[in-house]
Image (cartoon, rainbow, N blue to C red; front, side):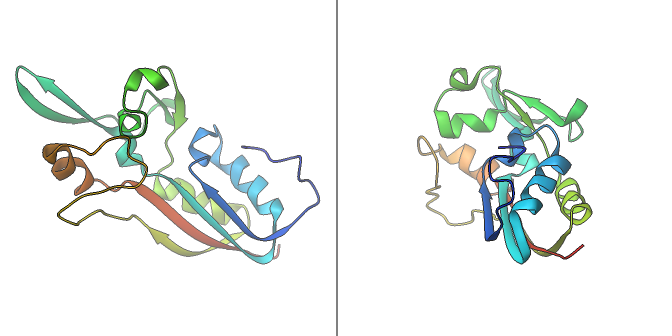
Length: 166
């Protein structure tokens, strides 16, 4: 997934990556591999967890709910046991020890540009409706979680880029 060699020599007009790039230890290597698959002038669409969503932790301490934010600059961009997985898996234990890599918007944009892409769009979608029903959620969040996290923390980073000739 991070270095796509089994499709060597093939090119496509559209390359779509949803929810995979954050498992790659080097975004630049991932971008280079993706660019090799893209025909000149082709479109690349990337969706990955927003770094803020990966870093926000919710806890109950002394009967009070608290929000904490891990470092935006973790060592080696590594994040272990990101709590956002509970909305997908239901319980954090299901992903115990899972290592992911946090890519800030600047990492993504610069990594794509350095590997022959021209950025044509960047989005950080926000859920704002009153009755929050989220895609890819294991269970409906309680009202506090919905208010604190889903309304104020972007869930995804989505980028559209065009493959440029070298």
